[in-house]
Image (cartoon, rainbow, N blue to C red; front, side):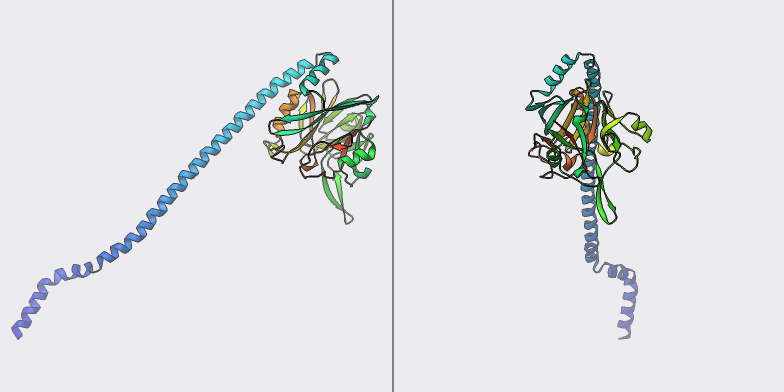
Length: 352
């Protein structure tokens, strides 16, 4: 019995170096499998991240292509504008009759017209790729036939363009300058921005210096268009302004297109424009927008090109969007984007 015990002890002693590793190997397969699971999860995450990176790369490439295309389009527009500006300068040398014929050839046949001893108006359809609207070419024989009117003839009030046309007995009307709301004495008033002049007088309480791109545009007492950015009252009043409103930006000055502000670039909207030809005739344009089945609107850059194509020497962007309205002979010809006319602070009307 003692010998058997000694033999067991000796056997265990000899096997001891192998018992530890053997014990460690017990359950090893399960541990390996457990370790494989998080490794597989990591592989899945890496693969997913790789797919996201490839997608991000593709989007970045597409965005880069879009930016390059926009830059090419911008450069092409600038080239066209320079060519058209040079052509407009050539047109200035023409006689009045030839110049009138050139204008009408570019505008096409009028859809309606009106003539009196004070004014001649010809109305044209504007039908371009992606946008539609109306154009009025106005020849003033009497400067008093063009008038800026406040909403209901009261500062702080609003009125639709058709209401202003009906109330004043006008033949033609478009919406005027920009406006903002102001609470005074607990009452909300809708005030014109910048400077508004009616019958030679500032209707604002004080002169408002041009802020950023805000301009004043209108006519002097002789019926000639005046406009620009003014930083003191004396500079504006020295031009003998008769009627005028304010908004932004200036599109064409002395036959040359001006840079469009960054925040206004490549944005299609309804637009209202007032401008002047080299012969002194006025052009009033309303473009519809925000209606994909009718007219999407137009960018200011594209509108600059259109004005230059038409030979316009001066061009000013008036309040647009839902305000844009064109009324002739008591009828709203365009389709305001709000679905109905928007009451505005000022309108520009042509009296019979």
